[in-house]
Length: 122
Length: 183
Image 1: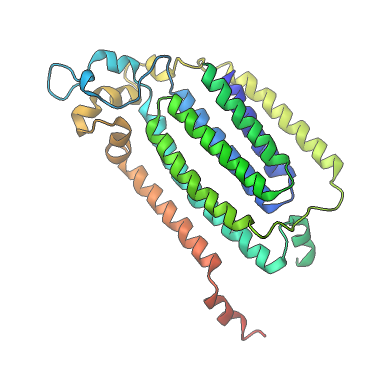
Image 2 (image 1 turned 135 degrees about the vertical axis):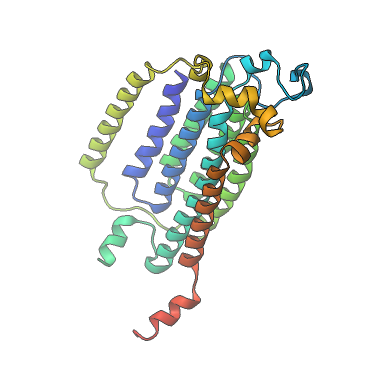
């Protein structure tokens, strides 16, 4: 059910990117899709009553540099978290690029409407 | 469970308003609401590193988006919308949504991840031997900076490439020199 809500968020972003004619609205739709995918990937690694994948003092075992079995059995998945961290930073870079293109287009044509832009020059 | 549903519904409502409002500035602010709601959601999903990064990125992204929309709010999408095209795309999106619901039945339910059922999966190895092999108490940091350091190198490359692209697009001086001989 939570996955379905995430997918609904993704679909709202897809609708915005496909149907809307304003360039900034299209960028907003792409951003909404990015949020939905990030939240979904983090949700895949969650487990009930889980703890964050950070080793505290109480999770250290008797031997040096090893963690207790309880921590291994309750920690949430660190792998999607690491990859989503990468994806969030990259989405900022792509957002800057898209907005730069939008600002340039506005300076040239004086509008954000993609149908107007097509009409003015081929 | 309750907090996840509340925050996701908040995000969905904010997304609806961001898509349907006419004012671009309020649409941008609604995107900020989605981002901060998502950040809280990450915190409840036991991912504090992601939550911190999301807040920082969200503030920067809001500044960039507001730079694009402020004082440019005059664009009104006039002209009749193509009714047929909108209906067709909504129907296609709905069909994709139904297909996705069917697919979600095949993956394990929320709260019981796949990696816990596979004894020697990569995530399980990172959790049990990450501290011993890398010496980092934060396992996410040990994954991005040690086990998968090349991923982080690639991320930095992509980031710098996109920033170079943005500066090239926004640059003014060289473009004028190119255009003058034409005129």
